[in-house]
Structures are given as C-alpha cells and as structure tokens.
Amino acid sequence: MKPTLAAGLQMGMRLALTLGIFAGFGWCASRAVQAAPPRKTKSEAAPNPLAAATLVIFNSRDGSSESLANYYAKKRGIPAEQIVGLDCPLTEEISRVEYDRSILRPLRELFSQHNWWKTKLNADDTRRVTENKIRFAVLMRGMPLKIAAALNYPGDKKDGPPVIR
Image 1 (cartoon, helix red, strand yellow):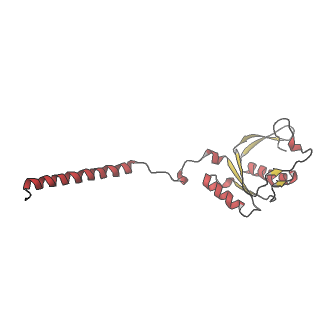
Image 2: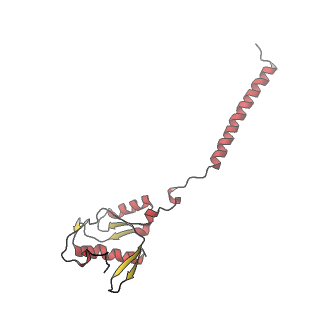
Image 3: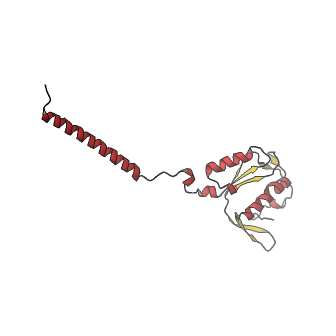
C-alpha cells in the first residue's frame, strides 16, 4: 500500500510535534538549570562561628604534630592564625613547673597579643579575664595530657574564680 499525501502530512505533523515537545522540554530544563543559584564551594561558605572560637595547639617537638594541626584546621575552617605551636616535652605527663614554662605562659602571651581575651587588673595586682573569644582548645598529638600534682601550688586555689598571676 502506497502512503498517501494525507498520511505523509500526518506523520510529518506527528514528528514535528514530537520534536517540538522534546525541544520545549530541553528549553525548560536548560532554563531551570540556569535559574538555580550556583552552589557555594567550601571556601565560599559562611564562616563557622565555632571555628572562629577554636584554638589548635601542637607540640613543635613532634615532627607530625604541626602537619596534623594544619590538616585539622583546614578541614574545619579554623583560621591559620589560631594554630599555635608550643615547645613542650614529648611526655604524657609534665611537672607543674614545665607546664607553667612551656604551656601556660606562652598561651597567656598569645591570648594577649592576638586580643583573644580581655583582662582587668585587680587591686591586688592579679588579673581577671572579662572577655574571651576562644572557647575551645584542640590538643594535637604530642601535647602533654597530664600535669603532675604539686604541693601548695598557688594556682590550685579552690575558693573563688581562677586568678591570673
């Protein structure tokens, strides 16, 4: 059976209609993709307030401690200026004297230099912290974890809030 002119026109119309529908869907889909806002990358994401309040502390005597601190901070969006290296013994427990010399004093100096805290001088020449921007301290591998007991240490006062000497 030979196709008639009417049948040919009908088939052509179906083909044109089908192509028009698919072309229309393609147009709609491309417009929808264009209308969607671009996704933000991690570097463009809004800053994390917890990261801004975090200090990462590593032991400069431990070869892998600094690279671990940098990796940790980068993954969590912690600012590079809040990664701190301290020169501490490579033992799990240190004496109170070692703690004061290698951890306490350097951290107090850094907190003051970077304005991570505000302090107030009391009448008895002690200082009290009135404001603190750093809320979390992350200790990396290699940092001492214990302070050995010391008899009559003035910083171990049990009454009242802690005092900075």
